[in-house]
Image (cartoon, rainbow, N blue to C red; front, side, top):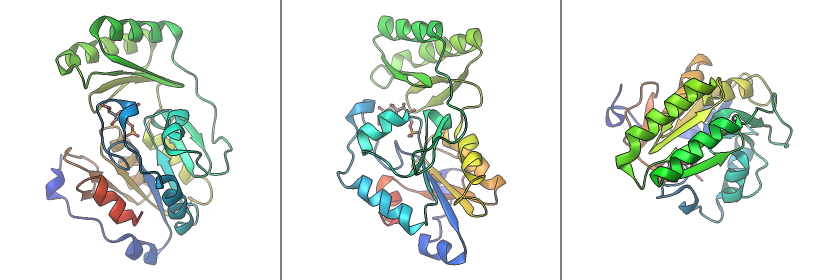
Length: 247
Ligand SMILES: O=P(O)(O)OC[C@H]1O[C@H](O[C@H]2O[C@H](CO)[C@@H](O)[C@H](O)[C@H]2O)[C@H](O)[C@@H](O)[C@@H]1O
């Protein structure tokens, strides 16, 4: 895995756009906004929504937000989005005009949710219910991280689900819900098809998106300190991302 500091900075966005159509797939937490103690404690600049819509226009619509959060949650922080978007780690996808791309995914089985909730209650962890998944957050109790991951693994096995681990979080999703699948779905439709995809993200779940970008002759940009297997370039932090995007 490449250490982020050994990766170069990406070429300027204006230079890339000068070479042909580029699509940007952009993660949210840790990429567009800084990491906070709890999911609701993030600080979102008041004009971020406006600036993202300007970026969408600059890219002739070829901008997609790809988040681990549910889309309702994402929009509760960002405001209404008329931007292509995928939530719940790519499971739920919408075009910029609000029409759904692909099937509506199913939520987790009730028993799996109950098992996650009960573990969270007994261990003093935060349980985040998503429309198409569920997350055990252990940022406030790092000593419970191993037990939380083991529990999530066992629940995944019992119910045929997939475990995705992120920053101080263990999440369960339906099989096939990942950011790479979301990028692939968007690359099959206008205005994304035929462009060079660039996936920008800070977390392990973003590796799928970067790997998929490579399949479409694009590349990934890793944000922050986490070593990345798939990224070609690196940006230091959220401020560097905003700067690179000229947000
Ligand atoms: O794919 P993303 O948009 O980056 O979402 C990943 C997860 O982000 C949120 O959790 C993370 O950020 C929280 C706020 O900074 C932090 O408290 C938590 O420890 C991080 O794991 C979100 O709550 C999850 O649903 C997303 O999957």
